[in-house]
View 1 (cartoon, rainbow, N blue to C red):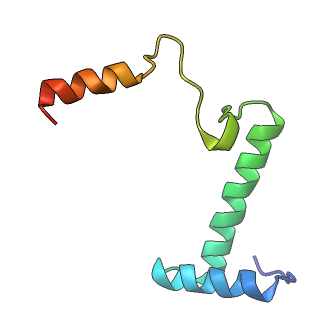
View 2: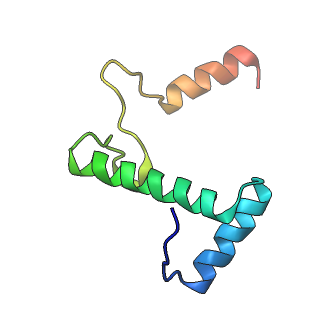
Length: 81
Protein backbone atom coordinates (compact mmCIF):
# COMPACT_ATOMS: atom_id res chain seq x y z
CA UNK A 1 0.00 0.00 0.00
CA UNK A 2 1.33 3.41 -0.85
CA UNK A 3 1.16 6.26 1.61
CA UNK A 4 3.06 9.44 2.41
CA UNK A 5 4.97 9.87 5.66
CA UNK A 6 7.18 12.68 6.92
CA UNK A 7 10.40 10.99 8.04
CA UNK A 8 13.40 12.84 9.46
CA UNK A 9 16.33 12.99 7.04
CA UNK A 10 18.72 11.17 9.37
CA UNK A 11 16.22 8.34 9.93
CA UNK A 12 15.65 7.91 6.20
CA UNK A 13 19.38 7.94 5.49
CA UNK A 14 19.98 5.26 8.12
CA UNK A 15 17.09 3.16 6.78
CA UNK A 16 18.42 3.40 3.22
CA UNK A 17 21.88 2.33 4.36
CA UNK A 18 20.52 -0.67 6.29
CA UNK A 19 18.20 -1.62 3.42
CA UNK A 20 21.09 -1.61 0.98
CA UNK A 21 23.22 -3.72 3.34
CA UNK A 22 20.37 -6.23 3.81
CA UNK A 23 19.48 -6.17 0.11
CA UNK A 24 15.90 -5.03 0.77
CA UNK A 25 13.92 -2.13 -0.54
CA UNK A 26 13.73 0.84 1.81
CA UNK A 27 9.94 0.41 1.97
CA UNK A 28 10.27 -3.25 2.99
CA UNK A 29 12.84 -2.40 5.66
CA UNK A 30 10.69 0.43 7.05
CA UNK A 31 7.67 -1.90 7.19
CA UNK A 32 9.71 -4.54 9.02
CA UNK A 33 11.09 -2.00 11.50
CA UNK A 34 7.67 -0.49 12.20
CA UNK A 35 6.09 -3.94 12.57
CA UNK A 36 8.75 -4.94 15.13
CA UNK A 37 8.29 -1.68 17.04
CA UNK A 38 4.51 -2.11 17.11
CA UNK A 39 4.84 -5.69 18.39
CA UNK A 40 7.18 -4.57 21.19
CA UNK A 41 4.85 -1.73 22.14
CA UNK A 42 1.83 -4.06 22.20
CA UNK A 43 3.72 -6.60 24.33
CA UNK A 44 4.76 -3.86 26.75
CA UNK A 45 1.19 -2.57 27.00
CA UNK A 46 -0.15 -6.03 27.75
CA UNK A 47 2.46 -6.65 30.44
CA UNK A 48 4.12 -9.57 28.64
CA UNK A 49 7.40 -7.73 28.40
CA UNK A 50 10.30 -9.48 30.09
CA UNK A 51 11.88 -7.57 32.95
CA UNK A 52 15.44 -6.64 32.09
CA UNK A 53 16.25 -4.92 35.39
CA UNK A 54 18.81 -2.15 35.52
CA UNK A 55 21.04 -1.41 32.54
CA UNK A 56 19.42 -4.13 30.41
CA UNK A 57 20.63 -7.10 32.47
CA UNK A 58 18.13 -9.85 33.12
CA UNK A 59 17.57 -10.80 36.75
CA UNK A 60 18.97 -14.14 37.90
CA UNK A 61 16.30 -16.79 37.32
CA UNK A 62 15.03 -18.79 40.29
CA UNK A 63 17.40 -21.66 40.91
CA UNK A 64 20.22 -19.97 39.04
CA UNK A 65 23.76 -19.92 40.41
CA UNK A 66 25.43 -16.70 41.43
CA UNK A 67 29.02 -16.58 40.19
CA UNK A 68 31.22 -15.41 43.04
CA UNK A 69 34.92 -14.55 43.12
CA UNK A 70 35.49 -17.79 44.99
CA UNK A 71 33.91 -19.84 42.18
CA UNK A 72 35.98 -18.00 39.59
CA UNK A 73 39.17 -18.62 41.59
CA UNK A 74 38.31 -22.33 41.95
CA UNK A 75 37.88 -22.59 38.18
CA UNK A 76 41.17 -20.77 37.60
CA UNK A 77 42.93 -23.19 39.93
CA UNK A 78 41.37 -26.20 38.19
CA UNK A 79 42.41 -24.90 34.78
CA UNK A 80 45.77 -23.68 36.10
CA UNK A 81 45.24 -20.21 34.71
